[in-house]
Image (cartoon, rainbow, N blue to C red; front, side, top):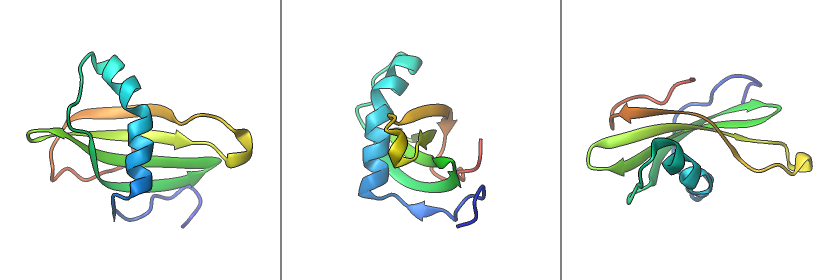
Length: 98
């Protein structure tokens, strides 16, 4: 992986589901709604001074949300950070840098 470049789209993993689950409550608070379904579908990552994860999440019906979550370097011992997100996405919308 190139430092600063996005990886190719990859299928969601147990790790990306865990990352999304850790920021779900924050997203629900910001959106003022609950998501009964919160299933990661695919992701890209970006190596910076830590890792940015760009994750497509199915939140019910035909609705998807794209998350940008920052994971700091292990020695910094910081929690995951939901840095940005995009709503009103579809199953076919590509996960891109935002």
